[in-house]
Image (cartoon, helix red, strand yellow):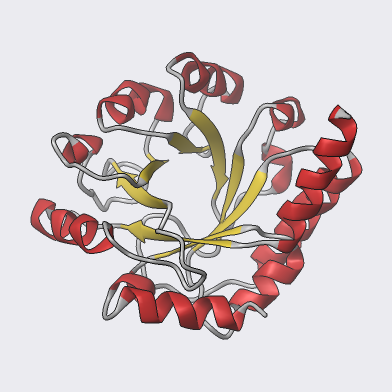
Length: 236
């Protein structure tokens, strides 16, 4: 029965895609406005928006500094909160993310000393855990042993830390590799693609095997519900 349920979930992951708004800003005021704008969003199929991804850059990863997880303190929302840590030693940011209401914490591996230690720390505080790879990072940098315990693997489509860059199609090969591993070895991690997602390329990302995409201002600027409808329609 357990194996059958696992296979059912794997098939579901391979066919569905979730569009997640992402926030990348160094302005606390803009951050609060974006969160407020997302609060009552209804998806095209009638369900409320489920989650938001908040990108955290400490200024050392790429030189651009964003708001910190503390920006979420005191903010009331039913949205699940993903923190995407583009920081030096993401493990040092886990407690900050917990205080910010994190449901899932995703760390870039490039400045991570120990992937297993990061995974263990996040699990210890009761949050879901993910690892992220920059577009130029080889798949071999991802330690095979962690694949059994990850909730998500996030793949950047362009260099992490600055929004609005051009989609790099090299990410599609990475998605296909991870999807093949997931199906062959019955792993239950999600595959999230982040950066440069447009109406023209979202279907190719889905067909490669991704079941989540994170989209920033292309989704949030303007009417979010209309934008979501356009992106979901483009997937099929």
